[in-house]
Image (tube, helix red, strand yellow):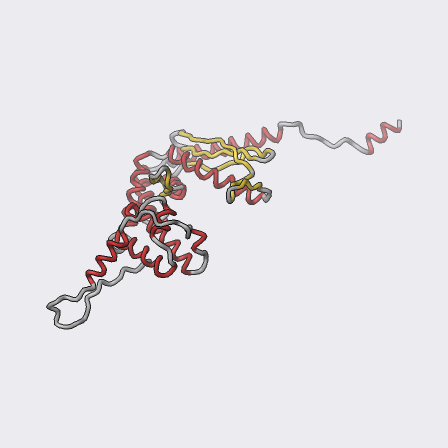
Length: 297
């Protein structure tokens, strides 16, 4: 009798069966997907308008400057559309579902998924990857304990997979036109030939920060003759950072680089500048004729 009274006085709390919450979450996600597909079918994209929106976005210098990534590998330069350009194209293309989702958290690692889904054509790209809770710093493996550091590590590793997924869904000709438009934007906002502007930048680095051309070429991985508009933009960013005291030369360049090989770009430009400074023999006075310098920025 006492046991029966204790059961009434202390009832067993109700326990929801396992799987019910998972089923409810799955049902909710399914309804959200159905809603997205329904809206995509009701308001399909206009391909010509979407293409024009993409090209108009690529006319912005802020996007054009970060539209491509590049890094040296095996003595050559590897380039391609950046994640910023891929996201801008996806936003203006419309009716896409894309992102990075963490699937599972394990001991010392995270399992995540990057995906991009065209809701109109049902074309989908997804990549599942594992991210270790560690990173390499100064030649050693550093264990990540801060949740924020782990989150940023997953986001950084997932950005490359997300870029690949977006580029796998967007038509290739749209990507090509966007890159061409970014090149035209950079060229239209530039002042003077690229060769002269790079030479001016190299000379300013040497005069104001004692940074040689060889040090800059060692950082980029190729000679200054191969520099592009994107390399020039990066040079300006580094110069502004040094000028404003935000960083030091050691943060960007190696001062111990030996002088092995030069491209002669700076010397050629200096020779041209010296020849322009010469006084003409039949000039009415002794005023030297000097070519005005192009601004670094």
